[in-house]
Length: 326
Image (cartoon, rainbow, N blue to C red):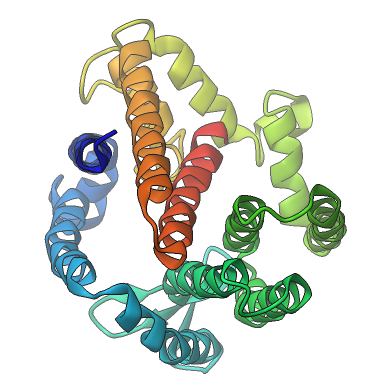
């Protein structure tokens, strides 16, 4: 089949998600934006601004050949690790919502862990490509991946961001699975990961509360605490019906979904305002993106490119799944 067709599907599905995302961020953030800045468009305007700025590195990424990316990997990993350590430097690092994973640059903040996602993907792609070409054996490849993953994620976890750590772990597991690693080896790594996850959950009461509220947000102990936002997100979806209450008409975004309704609970707002039609549109767009990304990865002959594309698709799909499911 024609690889250009999959590429067009990839761009088309991404375009649908971007346009719909910008519209829904405007709708979901208008209230908070007005109360914090006096304008209903400030948060959505910032989102649009960063989208436009992001077109520049996107274009540059298209122009950089795979060989150049391979040469950039060591420097990229060093920069990412340095930024993650800088998070803990007083006056530079910023703590937001209990997590210390941001750097204050004056007029805006950056989150090094977001850059770490990309760095881990292309670094793991290089290691697995060398494994496929028999340049290294499987044991060396696995040890390299685990050690590198540990070094990159340790500062993120130390900053309190368990969610990003889980996303990075899911990306790594997906790439190991795609590399053809034996299932019993994957199972062993998975068991170790679950044990570490349980230990991380036990170290913070807030994490246990969030897990409990996810399992039963309407319970008496959860509803007026950690379960308030998840419970009202379900109410938002339930009240949307087939075609929703209309764009901008969400009632739950008026405080019940918290100050970050335009990020953490954007899917609930879509469900309330655009109904089942809107949520299915989003799911189909993500499915089209994943299908197209997998097809692009399958059709490329270069193993480094194949694993890099698969890692990026895994990253986006895992984050979408977590956001929608929660």
